[in-house]
Length: 348
Image (cartoon, rainbow, N blue to C red; front, side, top):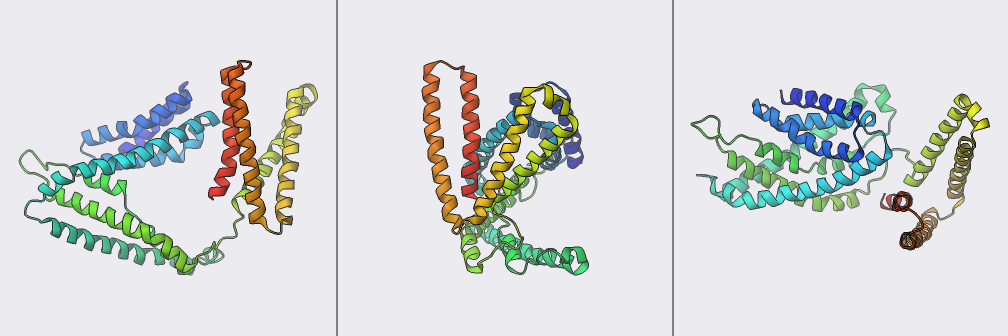
């Protein structure tokens, strides 16, 4: 029923975002409010508020391309939620740290060492079960389906990394905390504090132990990419060429008369065609590079230096008061997007 409440609520918010005259700020504010609005009615009817939030969030995410259609909205939402996710993750563990003394005091007849022992045992079970589960999931479909066998085999290294990366965090803790304090007016939920304490131990073990050892395992296994995937910058150029070709074909098929009478539309087409040539030239230059990694790093350094110089120039332009604040901010946003293409590629 928690899932039902979440999906029903997601449909309501979908209609609000889709059909009401919202702005990027309103859309961002609504997405912040949505988890609480889904959680409260589910808990009111004694359903799982956690399941309502998770299912509603997944439903909204699946249809996000129908709701958040403008670039301004998506950029605004990304900034808001990146900050919120970081703050909430930190806040949850700060709060559980503050509550830990009360949880320990509420263990009752169970000692702290027993709680730690239970937590370590369950952590071991969680890790082993995930390992036992991930290998069949990776290989059994290949035995059953000829189509799946056409894909590269994951071998033993990829499932190992995926299994070892199964770390527990805020969702596990939220699930434990969602256990009601009282079963009814007379009796408390049995061992609630012990369950929360064990969950905390499992999170600590998987995050700290598995998290710290994951880079070592990746290094020891010398894992490589099994799929034939191009480097990030080549993918970006290829995607942009495909999108630009789609735009040119659309202009030629549907807006031929506009191309002849509207100089703005004609200039837009020329810009796209020039962009196609530029992207194709970029791909060809990458193929001709004998040392592609060094050349790419050098290119990134040059571009970042130019972007830094342009940013200083925008600051001077802002102080000259010859252009409106809005237009200068638009130029800054475009510069940020251009820089993001470079820094995003470097991080990948």
